[in-house]
Image 1 (cartoon, rainbow, N blue to C red):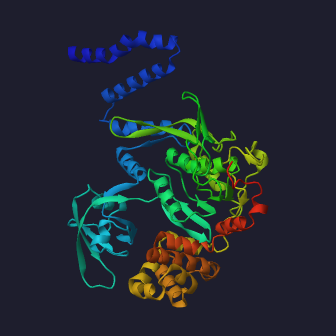
Image 2 (cartoon, rainbow, N blue to C red):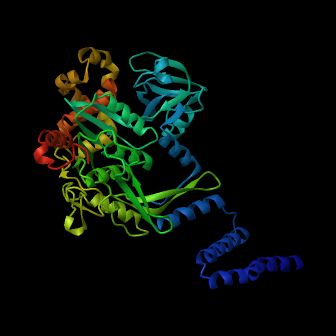
Image 3 (tube, rainbow, N blue to C red):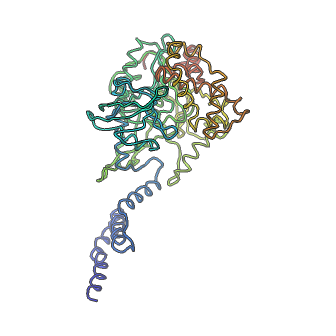
Amino acid sequence: MKKYFILILLLFIPPALSAQRIGRAAATGDDATLQLEKFNYFFRYLNGSYIEKVDDAELIETAIKDILAELDPHSSYHSPEEMVEVAESFDGKFSGIGVQINILNDTLHVASVISGGPSEEVGLYPNDRIVEVDGTDIVGMNQTDAVKLLRGPKGTTVNIVVVRPGQAGKLGFRIVRDDISLETIDAAYMIRPGVGYIRVNRFAHTTMSEFREAYKSFDSPGALILDLRSNGGGLLTQSIEMANFFLPRGSLIVSTQGRTVPSEEIRAPQQGTFLKGKVIVLIDEFSASASEIVAGALQDWDRAVIVGRRSFGKGLVQRQFPLPDGSAVNITVSKYLTPSGRAIQRPFEKGKGSDYYEQFVNRFASGYRDSLNTADFERFPTLRLGKSVYEGGGIYPDYYIEADTSGYSDYYGSLIRKGVIFEQSNLILDRSRNRLIEEFPTVEDFGDRYSVGEDTFRELIRLGEEREVPFVEADFEVSKESIADRLRFYLARNLYGETGAYILSNEKDAVVSKALEVLQNWEIEAEGIATDGI
């Protein structure tokens, strides 16, 4: 009885002892302190009294996620494991065997072998099927777990077993892991005489060094097409440096405004490299954050023509705060403003993140035509020409190009989602790689002369049915050319690399075609846009 009485007393002593402290917090208006005290008491009561043992780590993680979900849609939590992957994606390199992989039919396929990496050195090929890693059968293993087995510290050894189509038996490889570069430039080539094309997939630590190397390879072009479509952003420092590439020293690139952090103006720290040529920037609905900073700065300074579709509209600034277990929270601390003073961020309602992303999808509900009504947004004049640009909905292009959905059908969508077209490209390469390389030594030869035959279509249809994609003849006729184009893209990427694939696909790309048209008729379609410095 005495022990029972002492236990009850202990449970009730903490509030009494802290009453004065809580009272002082309330009296001074220090509400955050009061609420933290309140949560601490709740957590102690839960641990000391709940009928079952609670998982403290899981509860705290859930609480953090739920709190952030009540704020803006871009504040976020990252577990310790996720933080490792985030760091690798920004560092632009990791230690591994040097392949890009896909899971297809429960089997790990080598999608591509990174040039100069350890897998290339030992003769691993695209389309090889990795079935065993260090004695562990990985057939049926998910991609995340398989990647963990393949990656490891530089200098360590991994033994893999592969099945190679067209060759009997299994092949064993001993691979010494090394640092692997993750390039952020998908393609860089002269798309027309005097016109360079560079596609940037994200902004990581290596982006601008890659970009400058690509530019140097062009031998002083008179025009550049910068393709930022589907570029979801990344490091602010790299986007600042990219905008500075086209702007003179001192030009305002972006500013920030927040509640507790000082407002800041970020200006070009040095003289830009490409100040006197024509510039086209391509964006779409998946261009976000750092991509929008670059596009917005060049548009506001009347330095580039923007072509494509309205960008995502992600203009909130997150600061990362580390937590003791290696996890971290990204908390929104301010918002981005373009040089003209317009906000990039599209409207949102706190605590309704799902609605925020649903609104994004609904932008294209009517035949994928962007429903933006410029009358709904505040107008801002550009800094040199006074052209109208708008706040609150992302970056709206100077030339809007609707997405081409004429070749889309539900059947085509199912083939893509089930990986059937990609798998068909692998089947073709398994039996015909050497013949294709011999017959089409360059991607230009491939683009001019390779066609998808009826036998290939019939094989693809059968493969689709095996993968539970029923054949729909009407849909097939609608999408036949689109299916062929996607198959050709996969083949070209495997045979000629990423740049080769974009050389092929850009010839049929309406956004790229419009960019080339603007360049050809610059004095009319880009009147006043700076090509001789600003």
